[in-house]
Length: 234
Image 1 (cartoon, rainbow, N blue to C red):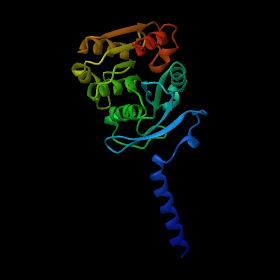
Image 2: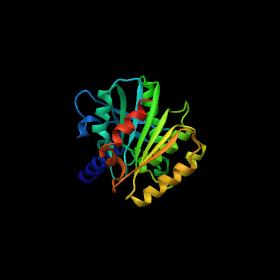
Image 3: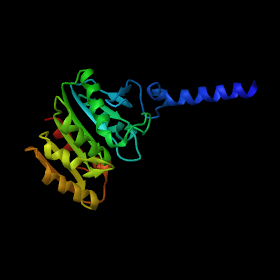
Image 4: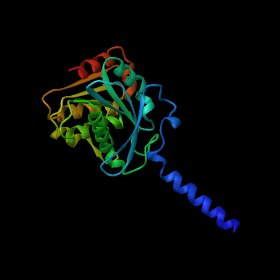
């Protein structure tokens, strides 16, 4: 009987751990602050994406992190956006942070779920900002989300990442796009130039900075964040 009881307890714990993705929230989040809203959003393929929403504006911004990271990467920027009138949502990609797992070839669906959340909460205009793999994901998401989003920013986003094809996406997207990259971040600098040339959008631009800054760290450069904020304000 003791063995049976132990097995039942173990099975219950395993079941609980497999279903907490939609129940975990601010208690598990070391980055959330008072007044910020934890959200759990279901994607089109059943993944539960965790995020933190900041601000109450009618222009929403989805912030998508880079590899080996989570929403905490963008929380300072989210708060800055919230303080100047935006509704910002920093998400955890599937299998990262407090989100549940799913097919990693569909990170764009996590971004799309974030857009749906912002629209449900009152945003009427949407911009996307992604770092590294998040840059790839937002470029793909921008090509397929309907109604269309209003702008997309890629910070060192590679053209291809683990089954994600940003090169194909930008060829069919008319969403205004900005590519930011450091010249010394060579592979990603090459990809940014390639994506810029391939992009079908009429409203497109690339900015290349000195140094080897990668992904969201580009926002620390003196001219980079003002450039992004100016684009978001359009």
